[in-house]
Image (tube, rainbow, N blue to C red; front, side, top):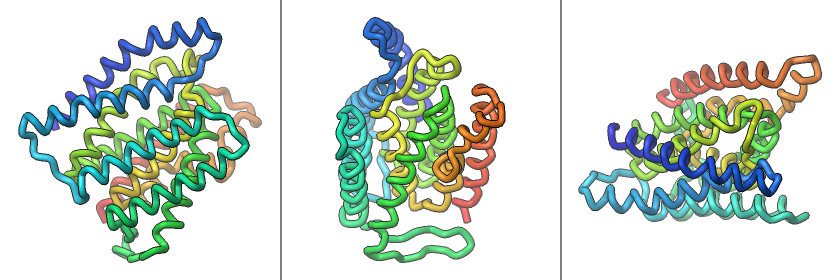
Length: 279
């Protein structure tokens, strides 16, 4: 665990160093968005640097899947949805659907994932039906994250809480590649969140919202915890269902109040989801 905590700290320090000149650059260009691009870049580069070093040092790498295939799926999701967010096109939604299906097919064909762990019921074998189900989950979380990003700190802070929960589950599952990835993501996200809380100096932008929503869903799918994903990410599910923060704004709640209480709800949902994941 000390190794993973060190990786998180290294990611935080690296992002903290990079983010200040990045914000200055964005302000000179009069654009407060782009934080997602920065995080995707830093996490990708640090993973490419650190994971081979970890292997070279003789750290025992464990995973239930082929490590190369697992990493391909994680970073294909992270980067492809990020790139999609950069390009403006009327066909974006069509491409999102295609990407979700491709990623789901990779999970099914390359990693042989075709089951769902349902608390109190056990393991359900979905067979080929796993592909449309996982595609729907990926698309739903992508849309939900985009909606939640409407308030300063709401989406990124809630994501941080969700990732902490899934980090614990990945450690328990002895999934080293996923654990390292989440540690790097958390470290970068903490540094970003410092500048994203109200009043935000930097926002994720479409690259971040699409990439982060889709990748959060894939993390849950890789761990076989779809039900836990829906609970741990309950704030995002609520945003997708009723645009909760818009409703609270209409009745007079101030932005920081909405965000803080959403974070508190996310904490309890994360605890509940981790409990369900053990059943």
